[in-house]
Length: 357
Image (cartoon, rainbow, N blue to C red; front, top):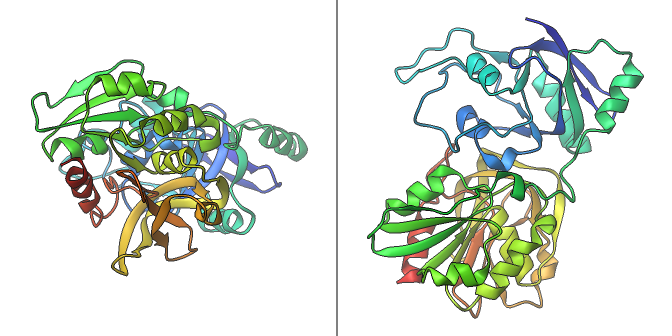
């Protein structure tokens, strides 16, 4: 395998070997603490613009299968692992991770001390960087890393949202418009399992067009980038409040907050993984959740709004959920559909069904 370097904008340089596409990649470097689910992570549109470091030391040991894709293609800018399994074994195995990365043009680097890298990102925050095979001097490599695109201020939703309207489950009991800000496939599947007809529409769809479908509810999905740069979606939500039941997930949660007047901000290193504890304030029960976000709602901005805080992150007390006190609308920062991750929060889809009823 060809030698490569991972370069961070603050000056750290890690040496490893390319095992994906042999091309330079740039983006914001983040870490994910999931032990499994790399296929879902690679195909989650929320990772657009990011180079993902997996903290679990062995990745690729069960290969790639046909069932676990969350979208039709990979969205990560790059992939970082300590060790990848050259000979995976699983009854669902269709191809090796290395082959999948090469076919999809994803640059990946192995042989990296992912523990040391993660400690840097936790201490200093996520940062821009590059994966490169170029043999340049240290100063030039760091300068290239500094020029890599970050996430703050970027509208990445428009790059991953669908262009056409698609319908699923025709004739089912409840009609739900799913606004695709970068939706994972299991959100749609979770609604279909609950007797919903799902109409998936682009993120740019107006409130008027959405209401023309005469839906029982509208869901705003997860997605990548800075929620402040996607305020055109928040404007749509504001127009829908009081007209129909609304459920927001991840970026949809942040955009619902912004539609109601709340502020968002960038987290130091975000929450990415399948083991984040969240407390439901109505029951004091703690759920283990799947998360993937680099921005959050500022809690103090909720104080004078008609919003009730419903969930908090046990680790850092950030806002994980709220509901509107006047209108049928609620949201959570984490992923109740999981994929990958625990299924503790599937009940939130049932709450949405009850709200529509």
